[in-house]
Length: 99
Image (cartoon, rainbow, N blue to C red):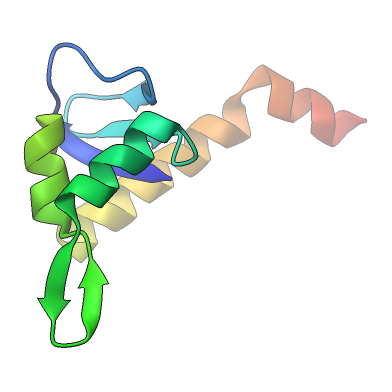
């Protein structure tokens, strides 16, 4: 599972890893199979609406010390374009295309 955040706690849990970090967006990979993460989900589980049990993103982020990114569509598209450009110009990707 991936989360995209504006800010994160200084230390992350052992089941969370920062994948990429830019000035305005942090990509975090969560090992959602990890037992400690599963325990946290069980602890935060609540009735979201009648008949629907789950974990609210706000509760999870609060517990992790993460401020979620709330991008508007224009910003999101800009960041996606930047990521695609980085992939397209990466030497490993260029080598794969040549093969």
